[in-house]
Amino acid sequence: MTDKTLTPSGHTEPVVFTRDMLDWLPWLEPLAESELTPRHMAGLVDAARAKSAYFRLLARDPDVLGARTRTDKDIFYNTDAGLPRAERELAATATSRLNGCIYCASVHARFAATYSKRVEDVDRLLAEGTGAELDERWNAIVAASVALTSLPMTFDKTHIDRLRAVGLDELSIADVIQSASFFNWANRLMLSLGEPAR
Image (tube, rainbow, N blue to C red):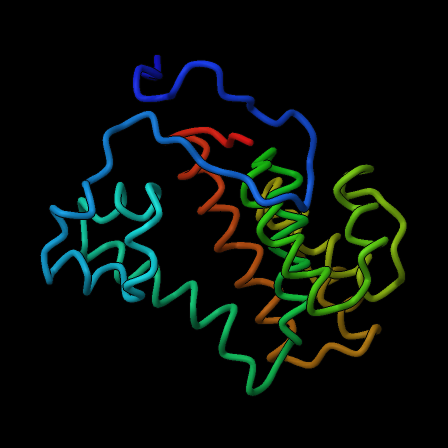
């Protein structure tokens, strides 16, 4: 049973997927900003993350947080080759939508919409779920992300062939796999430690 004593009473927990900016409330006590040591700050990687209760909670294990954050940044920000940023965010959005992580879906849906300029398609994915009809390229990315998220063994050659058929090269396919896989793990961590709030 989770201890929700840290969650303020009267907050509104969102029940639908949205691109709105949401808050996240921890069920465990995060470190206070004033408690963050240089080792914690190194684990955060970005000093701005010290404002986030989620990252201050993960900073209780700064070495693991540092590895997690560097992995996250490399998957989503290292766009010299491979998949465009918008479609990396699409994979994370589809994964979060399937896993029921309203907070993560909101963050990555905003990025997917911003970078792709396909706001209506992103909103359709949020509203209808991972079966939403987008276009063949986005449908292939969503289908691969869903397979990796629901049961990784169901991701197979048919998904690779479909991604290749819509123009993805090897690095782009690796980016779909990494984006979906990382958020399949990250969603479960976030969902077990707290809840979204408006």
